[in-house]
Amino acid sequence: MMKWSHTLIAGSALILLTNAVVLLGAGYNRDGEPDSQLLLTQRELQHSAWQETRDNSGMTLMLNWRFEQAGQNDLDSGLYSVRWGMPVWLDKAKMSELGFDVDKLASTVEYGRHYQELQPKEVLLVLELNDKAYQHQLQRAKDYLDQAKARLDAAPDIAELKRKEKNAEENYQHELQSNSRLFVIDAGLDLPKLRATYPDRARYAIVHGLIRPGTVREQNKTGVGGYISELQADRINVPFSYRQVFGNAAPYEVAVAFGKRLEPWIVTASNGAAVD
Amino acid sequence: MNIPSRYEAQQRADQIRIFRRELELLQSEGVLALSAEQRLRVAGHHCQLLSRFAHDFDIDRDQRASQLSLGMRIASLFGALALSASVFFLFYQFWGWLATTTQVVILIAAPLLMLGATVFVQRKDFSGYFAKLAALVTFACFVINIAMLGQIFNITPSDKALLPWAALAFLLAYACDLRLLLVAGILCMIAYVAARTGTWGGMYWLSFGKRPENFFPAAAILLAVPLIRHRRFASFPPVYRIFGLLTIFLPVLVMGSWGESSYLDWDANFIESFYQVVGFASASLAVWIGVRKQWPEVINTGVTFFIIFLYTKIFDWWWQSMPKYQFFLVLGLVAVLFLMVLKRLRTASYKLLQGEQS
Image 1 (cartoon, each protein chain N blue to C red):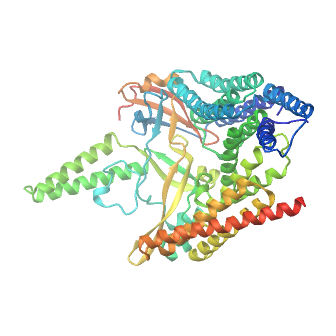
Image 2 (cartoon, each protein chain N blue to C red):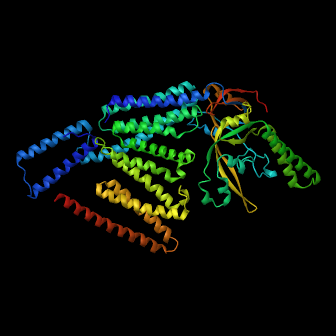
Image 3 (cartoon, rainbow over the protein chains, first blue to last red):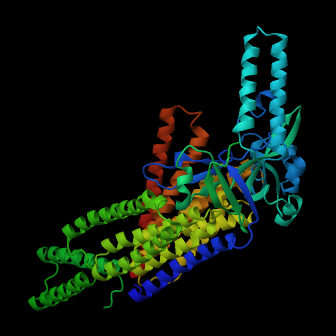
């Protein structure tokens, strides 16, 4: 057995060195100008109450991100702030650009033969706050509401049309007032290149994430696309100094910075300012 | 004679106990009669040895002590696990009410203090039960330390955390002669090497389990470690060999039934057949090496997996087609056949042993 003093020195050195590496990494992430800084509200940053239990006093906020879905029908358009399905921009060309073997994927739909190609890959994802993607989604909800109203005006006695119009109205109001305006709009492998494409650091954040390829059988052809299987910066720890901001039902506004390693942290948080 | 470890001291004490019983029998059967002086010398020597072992290692001197010590081992294992869970929940219970600096200081201080406590306990308690308890809590504190720092600073999860965890577990295992910590270190090491292998193969690190072949480099390392002489840690090489074999056999078992999970760019059915053959061959090889080298843990692991491979194949072939009574009859007959083969193997090894002795 080792001499006790050697154990103590070696163990302490290992513990301290590991902590130093972790803390220096966290410090490096927060050093200097952040890569981006977004001003988020309760619409995009949800207080995850389910994580707080009798045994866990920690507080975590969840980034409520969305994307425009491919193959969306009218009923789906913005009804909920969901994340299932394939993003509309994650098509065959984008998947190829991200390094997936799209030709092999498209050659047949048999899952077993594509196990290798169907593995997720680490990429960079671009988050857009309250811009074109949200406006587009809002417009779609408005169009759907207008269509539902027009159909109801043409046949005011049909109960089904009344229900659809009511749902469309609710959907539009949700989209206008409470749904998240934070959309994943692009993916890439090269951070400087993505930043050059999306230079506004107060509107576009770039984070690490995972994309998994997928295939869809359409009219005897295999369509290739992808799914966002994980967004790695979507849980943000609330420091003790900001706990009171999230301790009540009042709306809040939070400045979230994404540092050099694209890891987020809360810069400021306050109640009241956010009303939309 | 210099006894380097508690494990070897216990082995020697067990030998003495068996020797004393056998000597009594031999004397009562009139085969051997030691003179009074010889008996006294042997008994004195053994007493001296046992006293030294009891002082240095707190070994079990008799059958009753050995039965009690099994209970103590189980109690210390459960105690260690429960205390580790308690530390985890203690921090979780209050961490939200602490400022970030306080959180960080507590997280760093906890494993350091527990390390000091482990070293202190180890010096005072030669039995090793309390040292095992303290060492596992130290390891748990360090795991919580790094995991919680990751959560506090929203750090992207990384396989690199497994490396210092493995290093501390190995350090505590070798410093306090603890197999439990050795297992913890081995598991961290397996996960790290498999994750790295997966990353080199183009996978996301957390998906390493989806390609069972990622575990093979870790198996090679584990099987190579006992080649380094473990003179003072005689109980460690069998642990390395068992986990090395498990890291081979379990992936082979998975790929024998699920060829798509392999890196090999062959037809899935062919991959499955290939790994089934590899499974039988490697299990047989393990039994053969185990017999040759007298490594019981290798023989047992090899035999167990040979049977699992065989039963899996029999299930594939006949579960659907055979009436159930016939299917289980075949399983029973296979077990009988296996017993006969092992009996022959045992007889052959006796002959080998006799040949070596003469």
